[in-house]
Image 1 (tube, helix red, strand yellow):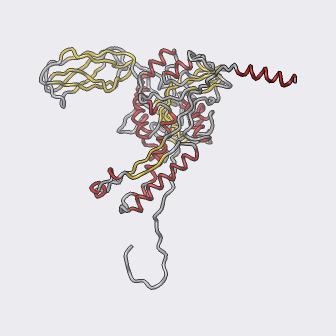
Image 2: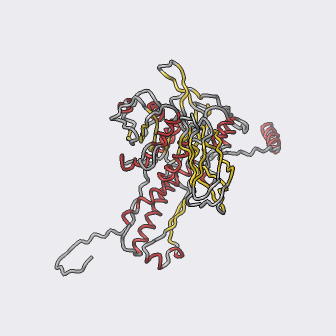
Image 3: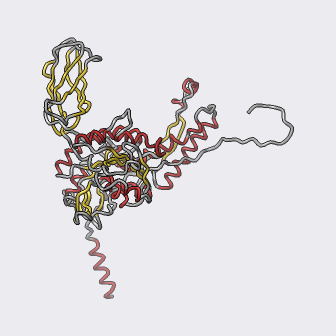
Length: 477
């Protein structure tokens, strides 16, 4: 405020003080799939489209073919939900469709269209699903062995090219890099296994050196759609609801072994849904309905609630029965849960049963814990744009710190966290860092873990017989 002569009363608005922090919407489902008969004007390819639960007429324009219409129905069966929908072209075969789903990061096609959702429809998806395409373990390049290391290679200029074998018209997408040690190619690192290979592709090593050769082998590899979604989920602070293979327990465990992320939540097996055209039950991927349950729980109870032990609406069964009973540690459901695979049990309806992500870090084992932290982090980041570029002052620092503390107290009062606080650490805020315009505040929080196990300890007590005898004597007296 500049000083200038003025004769008379005035009001000067002071903008100091704490600001309310608003938690971002957590229940937004990002759905990607195919719908070859869709209205192209309503659902253009590779474009995020906002679909509200009240827009059933718009959803009908997807047509019956492909995966999207059934997935939308499955989501809406669980209650009102907001969907960011991306339609991709159905390819001539499974490999081509998977490639369309993976899309191009620079063009924001396929799953990368979710990155454009905030700009396109002012909404960020937090629960990502691609029903029908995340349970597949396609054939790709699963190993490349170095036959001859050659000489004279430079790590910065050596390239590896993978070319489909003669007659292989579907294999695509495999990439790799060379490991060079003292001028010799000592190993090949597969960066993408690709999909659809029917025969071992040719590996070509090029660069300044000579003599290096390698041989590729093919086999079942991790699902490429989930693999591509992982980076997007991290950027958006979202989670991926992935379908298991829907075959056997062993296959589900093998599928689980492909992942080690706290953003992947696997559901196996598929569900059965009544089909009016077939006049019978048909199998559908469970991921859409599981995402709908997560969204419903966010709306009804809060993002800190687990979707486990919640009823799946709109299904008449599961594609294979899953054994479960109270207290049975050797049941199929418990076997799957022990391996971080969520399943579906039948108890007063069909229920999701399982809390865990595929995290290799036990600190982030529970889906609800991961999502709670994500929501808080997003809220805190978004809340302080107003503070950027203001002059540093004790009042500004206190306003920021107390705004966070007030927000954390509110979350604790709602049961979203067990506690949290924000503080200033002098060791991290040295004069040189503050002179550079860099303020650092710490905060902690602890999301509540779901009560996954409840143990009652039962004891025998012979003293109750003494009470029995004494009661008889009293009554007879």
